[in-house]
Image 1 (tube, helix red, strand yellow):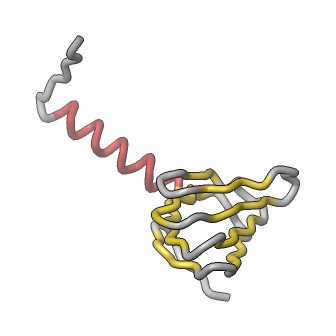
Image 2: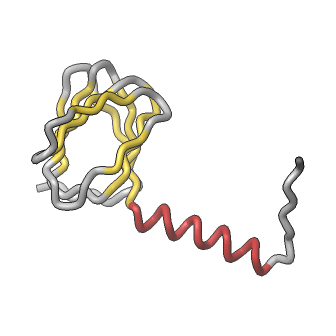
Length: 101
C-alpha cells in the first residue's frame, strides 16, 4: 500500500474516486468540485473551490471527483504548528497589532 503524508496536493479526473482510510486531515478543494462520504455519516458533502472539510480520524472516507479536481490534504498537526510558529514569532518580534475602527 502506498502511504503519503500531508501536506499533499493531488488531482482526480472526473469520475475518479479516492479512499482515505485514516482521516484526521483537512481536505481543501483548490479547483473543480468533489463530493465526500464518510462511514457512519448519513450525509454526503459537496465542495467547491476554496471550501474545506475535516476528515474524521479513523473514519473511512470516500472522495469523488464531480469534475476534474485539484485537492490539498493538510494534517491538523501541521496546520496548528504553522499557526503557532507564526503567532510565537509575532509575539517575540515586538510587532504590535492594531484594529482600525
